[in-house]
Structures are given as C-alpha cells and as structure tokens.
Amino acid sequence: MLKTESSNIIKTAGEMFFRLGIRSVSIDDICHELGISKKTFYVYFESKDVLVARMLHANVEYMTAKMEELLKQHDFKKMISQFLKKQSEETKDVRRVPQLVFDLKKYYPRQFEEFQEEMFDMQKRYLTLYLERGKEEGFVRANLNIELTALLFAKIHSDAIRDLELIEGRGYNMHQLSMTAMDVFVRGVLSEEGMKLYN
Image 1: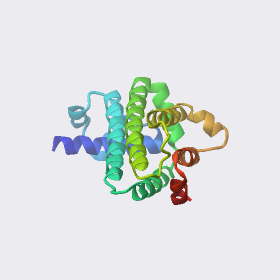
Image 2 (image 1 turned 120 degrees about the vertical axis):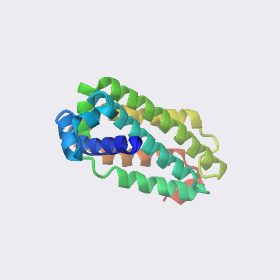
Image 3 (image 1 turned 90 degrees about the horizontal axis):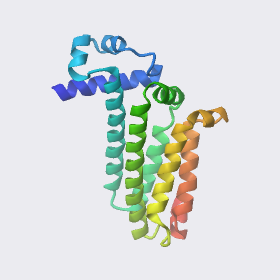
Image 4 (image 1 turned 90 degrees about the vertical axis):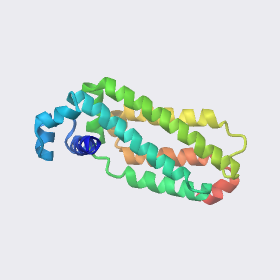
C-alpha cells in the first residue's frame, strides 16, 4: 500500500511537472490533484526536492525496464525494429521538455546531475548489450569498438539534454534531435547486411 501510494504521487507529480513546469507546481497543487492531505504527502516525501529526485529516478527505472524488454527479443532484427518504434513513439510530445530541463538545471541542479549520471550509465550499458547482440548476428560491423561507441553515443545524448535550449534556439526540438542522432548512430554501426535490414 505504501509503495502504491508513493508511486501514485510520483506519477501524478511527474505528469504535472511535464505539463506545467516543476517550479510552478507546488506540493499543495499535487495534493489537490490527488485528493490527499499535505500530512499524507509528507509520510512519503520529506520535501519537494526529495519528490523531484525520486521522480527522476523512477524515469530511469522506467527506461531500464523498456530496455530489458527489448533485450528479450530473440533476434537483432526484432530488437532494433522495436527499439526504433519505441524511440519514435516516446519522443513525439516534446513541447514542454525545454521548460522541464530549464527548471531542473536552475532549481534542482543536484537532482538533475544525478539523473544525468544514471541515464548515462543506463544508456551506455544497454547500447553495449545491443551492439554485442548485433555483432553476434552479423548486423553490426565486426571491427566496431563497441565500448567506445556506446560511451560516445551516451555522452552525445547527455550533452544534448544539457544544451537543449541551444538546440531549441536553432529551431529544432527533442524529437528531431533524437531521431536524427539515432539515424546517424545506426548507420554508423551497421554492417552491409545490417544496412540492408535498416533500409
């Protein structure tokens, strides 16, 4: 019951933060939305800072579960197909991402950096596993340095989130950035056989 209640608070707060920005959503707003008292809120979270940190960690856990789900595919063809599909679906609604990132960087810098580190480690780990699977099946270049490639791509993604205002200022959004980066990455790692599959 405790876990369910705290999960509901995290989920509702996350949706409100995404929709309205973190700074503009108060604990009172979250409690009103959920129909709970502030006393109940403080049973699960010492402060809004703690809530923000746990909300970000929950996001990493969600992405990790998705990555694990993809790894259960029995072959690289299905895995990469599902990966690209999920990537496309989950980055479409990006209109409010810049405000969310801005609030995190300005008002919750410690939580933002911890989130970035978690995401970086998670992305590097699963990209390594994906590439190893692809190499085994002949779809990833045999001479590819998998560890360095995974490190590089995870770093590019991490830096892009940090500098999202710069990207938005050039007239692009997170969805466009993500899909372009993925296209460049996939084309760079695939073998000739892999390119046939991708095309």
